[in-house]
Length: 212
Ligand SMILES: [Zn+2]
Ligand SMILES: [Zn+2]
Image 1 (spheres, rainbow, N blue to C red):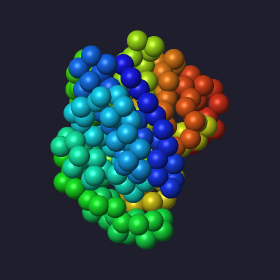
Image 2 (cartoon, helix red, strand yellow):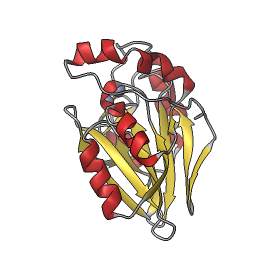
Image 3 (spheres, rainbow, N blue to C red):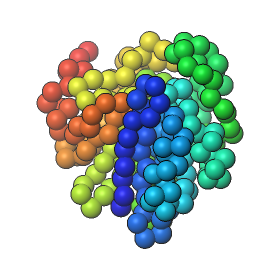
Image 4 (cartoon, protein in one colour):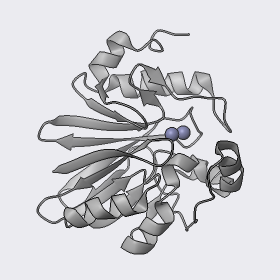
């Protein structure tokens, strides 16, 4: 399994591509910007994108979704509860001070317990609301152990902000403790921004773990 994560866009959103090395079927997680760079990595891997999935629809996570969707023809998928944020992209662009990205049709079909299939692998979907109402995390079992893509719900030593549209601090703490921290300690974590970590490390050192 090929997993590449790299920062894209002005806010450094971690975009990830997961490719089955045999069938070349792939999933792209959070194509937040820099479409040309994402396309180049997919071309180099010989990938055929089966699904484009999003941890949430803040502008820095969906900035290259439309050109990627047009180029691959793959469905661009979100949790339905985040659709209102995508419809507010002009407001988000004004807040962040970045240009308005192109938009495309989104499928609002991702929900808790679903598995996103691509070739020989699948991404498990976990609902982890709080940063936004439709925030998701994705879990992938790899030969090197489990890997979680936590979006802006969990960062190394932090959690996402909850003061934007639909954010809620009690809800994000519930997602953290009730969902993410129940994953195996050895689970490697690729957050929405910044460096990687593990669930075990965050249980010990994340200041929000014990916060009320
Ligand atoms: Zn966000
Ligand atoms: Zn973000």
